[in-house]
Image 1 (cartoon, helix red, strand yellow):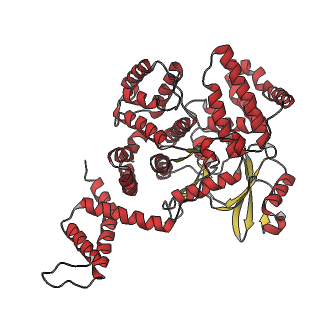
Image 2 (tube, rainbow, N blue to C red; image 1 turned 135 degrees about the horizontal axis):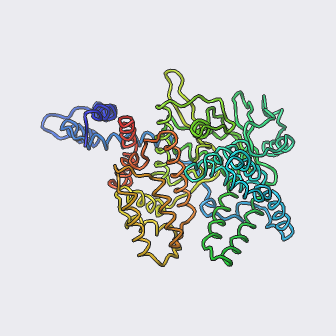
Image 3 (cartoon, rainbow, N blue to C red; image 1 turned 90 degrees about the vertical axis):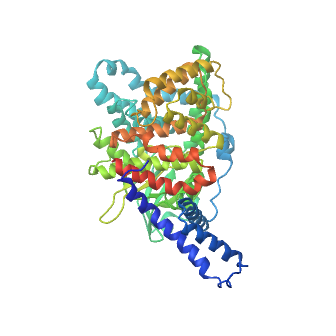
Length: 557
């Protein structure tokens, strides 16, 4: 259905495309000599141009739109060239093939277990006081927990980063304390950075770079980042922390042993599989040369998006990555500092305007949907701490830059279709269909109570999810679904949990920055088009449908 507000905007989208098609037809026709009267043309191109012109003269909108989209896609495809390759091993998550680190010995495991026990002993011993005394919990205990996670290493820092972006799950004061882990994780010394850069690039730092800041500008769970000047351009040099691979392998070996113990003692099923899947993903993230491949592929996938950027790769090895420096403010600065009313240590940012906040949320959703519906390559760490906002200067435009693409989910067609089907079932308010989609979320589904699970989902949807336009609280529905998954023993593979986690982060960001923005309703144009059109036609129509979605977003803002 159309409305008076949307029609002018829709015409603005279609008019340039229509003019483009008419111009191509006219050029094709003008390049051929005229045919004699009463004789059909013998030139195939001329006959095609004439037929096309007749269709245009009859004003068939479908011909205009499809033709324009096809020509536009062809021009864009030629300009982009072939996609950068991605190695198959990342899709298989084979830990042994990704690293050359030997499995830890018994003495190493015992020593690491003792160290972890000592690291977490302060918050564990004082947890009773934190439970009884809110002031102590908010002002002291959460900071102790954050410090323990930072000292414990990569796997624990990564969990803390994820938890900090979920104020809908964890207390806001805890999220504020954990937010410092995004950029203020423990740092290594200058000697290690200097040695790794020399080994990776084949020359000392002072010979390669015009300037190199010894103090890192940020530090994460895997590596820290230095700002430098290389070949007269500002770059970011990412250097892997020492012994990070050995630490991850050791920690996940302990986690697997703990999951086996919990399974024997308390019957906790599926925990080992989850730990194994996550460990493969984490180990892959330690390879900065693999992150470089991801950056190249994401850059290729989003080359036509003028307001979305990925850092450009300039040089890469297993331990060092040199990329273009992206200026801006982390979105987590606004979601944590400004909305929760606390400081995460990023300060200095002015509050977002309504237009800027809406841009961050709506464009973030567009990114997620394109990765899911078209690319089958999903950024696996799509939280606000990995999204930079470059605010528009006068007569400019806002833009986003996505960082830290070491973890990705390589989706198969089956995985993408199952999750898209689940989203469509939510839009239709169909709990039974949603349950059937969730049961496809694992290649080795062990759930035996399928009918009971389907009945439970139908009951959940009758209470909380009645379809588009009913004010669905996306996060509430997903948490209800996950509770049923746990109660009924439904298995979910790692890629699906990545999709769920990302959409929960998106919904949490929307609820924080633009509370009235409904993630599912806003996604409807793209989901409906994906369901109605064959995949090749949807790929052609994606830019147009995305433009119409942006028009709708602006109208509803």
